[in-house]
Length: 264
Image 1: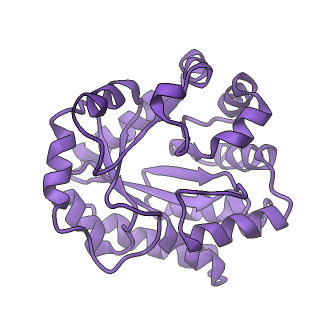
Image 2: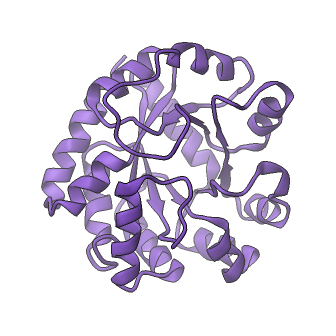
């Protein structure tokens, strides 16, 4: 378990002639009891990595779809402890790498060492904290290193030069490339310079590169894989299906179509 399993998932996909699909769903949505069913459906559909959101009242990186999911989860009584329970339930059923995506405030309140230790105990392999700059990770990074979790950092079109290199050498598992400015959410198309953006970070990152933000259709997935990315992150599209009342089997079919688009 741990960040090595994340890296191995990307490597295994590449050996099969595929890119990796990272599927995001909000933990506790529509409620903590049913949340594992949707995550397991995503795994059954072929997701190579499962990214599980921790609901928070001020999700600065998220668009309206994921914001609404966080509200639903919070109203259903979801806490960070409940999300850890969701992760543990999923881990008991599948070996797909699990990455938690949560904002710093709930982690700080929980206690950085305590949170990372609890996550590792539940079978979590990695952690994304989008509002915590790499230069300020401090004790959280040390805790993830002690417990073998991958601390996955995000880079954006604005990340340049030496800072890009420092972030790339600090991340574990994969480097998360934000494809565009703004928040998460479905888009009709990809930025026209996506190939150049991927190439720029390929030059500084000796680890898998996954592209997210605005990736919502099979053709988007295919495009970023053809452009040189090792993986694609899809979130809002899947979260929207849960919001619309889709059954887990319907979500599985959507993930299967997205995964098929990763073929090289």
